[in-house]
Image (cartoon, rainbow, N blue to C red; front, top):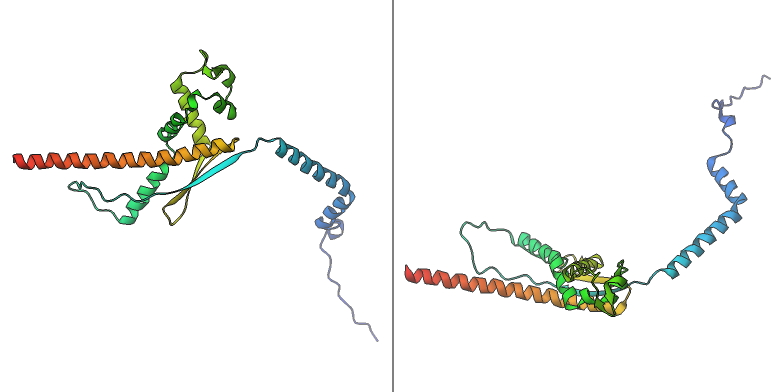
Length: 224
């Protein structure tokens, strides 16, 4: 009986020279170097722990503000194109969020907290040469002018301030971070209060303008 030939598929050229799969090589290296790898991981964790312990702690104070839409304008100028309420609301709230982070508001807060004349404030945030600016709490001749110190203080406040508007609501969360928990709370409380004051002042100015405008129009009508 003639044996039936069995065909064996030919191996691709060079298959015998490929060696073991890459994953096998990786696991072999890991097994051989496991103690070195474990040691490197332990050293990295220890270094990260030391760095974390040596870092200055940061404290964040937060507050939530509710921003109410202003009522319609008392004065309607001729030729003004009507806009959808949704667009107006979006523009209004984006404007309010932007006003929370203005230099003018930060300068007002720095002034209320008397930060330009506070030596501890500049040292708290690591301002260079702050030691040369004050002597026994009093600005020296080498210190920048008060307006310049106010500008620097406002910049520091803005750099550590953050806003987080809540979607589909009238709420915005504001926060301030510093190495001093008490100071962070003072800043965020003052920030909230001053923003409310500025908003009320702006609305009073708008009301005063509308009243004066209407009075002028009435006088013009009487004369006519």
